[in-house]
Length: 154
Image (cartoon, rainbow, N blue to C red; front, side, top):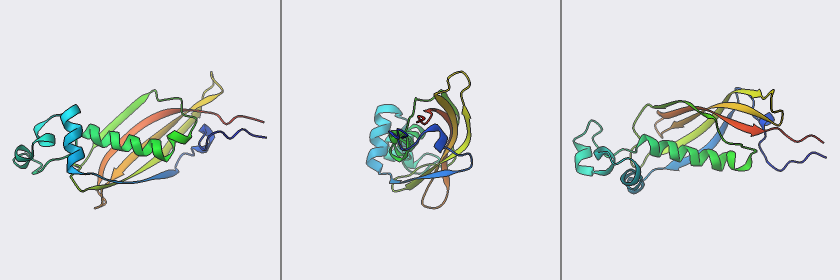
């Protein structure tokens, strides 16, 4: 009998397949609170200064956007997986500002999967996470990789 402790193992990530991770609506209060603590640039924390910026209003920090995406990834699959962490991210792009009231939809597409030859209990999965706002506009992409345990054999 196979031990299926987790829903997601290395073998479950098929290149070309996408996982829908749900939606999250962003509030002005959380944008400002995150930025006050981690990225206090004026267009993130000061409504008056933000109106005079190139953005015309308060926008979320890119790091806030990445953090929201990470939460959705953990809730969507990593939290119920054989994840062993990540050796890194290759690319992050903030392609449009995230504004108060935006609803982000996040997906994770598997772009590659390679079993380890030196450590046969694991493999590396390459993914692209994409956040799209309610207007269909891509606001952020993250190209990264994660290490996942192999499914235990009988």
